[in-house]
Length: 259
Image 1: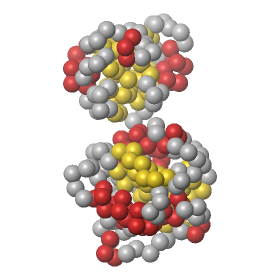
Image 2 (image 1 turned 120 degrees about the vertical axis):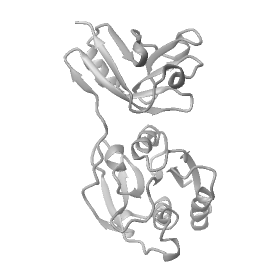
Image 3 (image 1 turned 90 degrees about the vertical axis):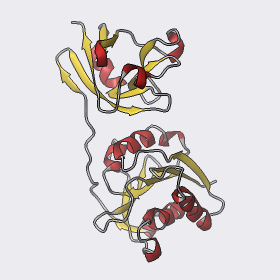
Image 4 (image 1 turned 90 degrees about the horizontal axis):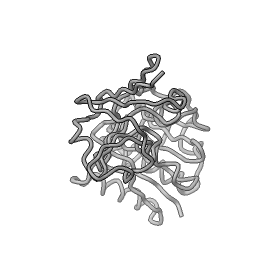
């Protein structure tokens, strides 16, 4: 069965999400539409990239991922369809692909599908939906666009290494209020080199031990662990880490390794 996933900032209050799904189903009634999320903060490209990057690989090969972040009409924006790791991605070239992909895509085209003027302000339900349906139906990239190269670059804030200190920042807070940082497991492990460490964050709070799972500490206790995203996260077992610890997106965290 053809699968199209949706990652957007459309929310669930208005009719926009329904209009998008209706447009897709009108073109391909048998398609399986999967909502990754519609709750990305408006125009927040880095958060959308983080969510999609950590979820797309769980889907079968050949899945089409339709991205609706900052996708309102702009005459200077390219609309792209790409193949990456045997998945297809369709969206605006607004920097999200540079954050989403770790290597160049296997193929990429700039869409040349005719714009329906009555949907000029909402290309997501027109050009991008048509492209996604075409790919989900087994069509090729070459049939809907012209070969393209080069992607709009958007830089993600990277951790800073200072001798025995690693400084990172909060990049995402999930629905359980767990605080996720930009420190990856690979980076942490390479710097730790089996040394003890202490993680410092707001209010001079600290943690000096990694947990394997949330229930490894008593309820209400704070912990740090590498979650399913392989990024270091700060949590409270059955508690609100972001609110109780005063941590928000952009806040700095610091890890000190013992020499």
